[in-house]
Image (cartoon, rainbow, N blue to C red; front, side, top):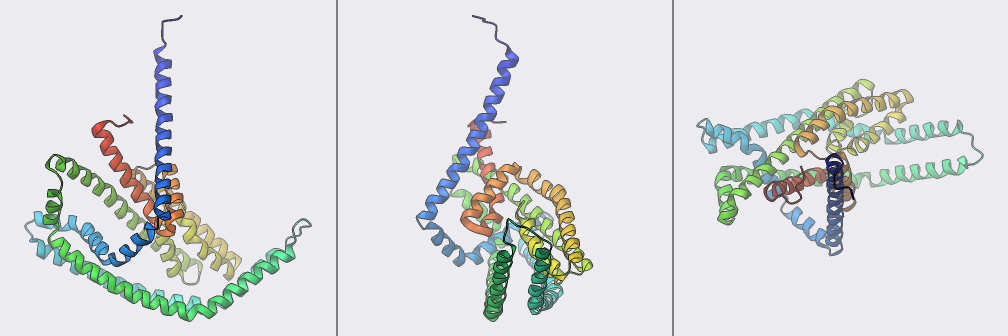
Length: 373
């Protein structure tokens, strides 16, 4: 027996074993999360949670507003500005910006939406003409083009007639939802104002509820979670705003109908990593091709260029420097949360997984759970 052991080979084996164990551990965590969500869904707990969330929406809005504004007010406090005065000033600026934004964007958005709705019949007709010309260029003995064409046109006609019939009720529902959302948001702002006034006292009060020997650790963990979430939220909002502005300008230059509406949709959906650009860009491309092949191709190229720049620069900075999540982890999270919660789940998946990683990393650093570097 050879008693001389090759240390280099041994180190390689140990390193590979650690990587395999790490992958296996991540896989087990993913499976565990999926099973947990599946059990919760089967027990009907999701519906209860959603009902509670709807009732407590103003509270959550208030907490988010207070959480976002607290660092600015804390900086003002360090400059000898009283908290009440600092909170009032921040709220005056916030409300002023919201009012200016509404006055600048809402009328344009409203007019473009009405114009788009009025042009729906023409858009559907253009789409049918474009599809018809496309099918005329196809000659296949294997596929029955005529049956596909009739089926597709039938679905387009059904969708168009259904949309025309349900449009008034949709507009009424949208209006009532908007009014309700504005009222909820105003209540949330009021709650956020009072939370900001007592933010320091509230934090210390909540910390006092934790046993003394765990307070320092809890405070450190909360700080890490706060830094991770704040970086992601600030970056995601800035990213969405930049995409909204660039997309709107590009669509307007190209000549796409309702450029502001489609630009806003691209910006909002862009918050969803990887899948967001496809969700946001698809409606714009469809309407663009209905206006003409040139406009359709130009819109598609514009979206690809914007998303390439955004994906390689902004998203990389947001994800890698805040959540530090592997792209595979993000995609798996999107699939799982999207399966259970739809679009809302896809929006929340990355920050939720980021928080879970921060919590795990904290306990791993403190207790050496698996000694992963």
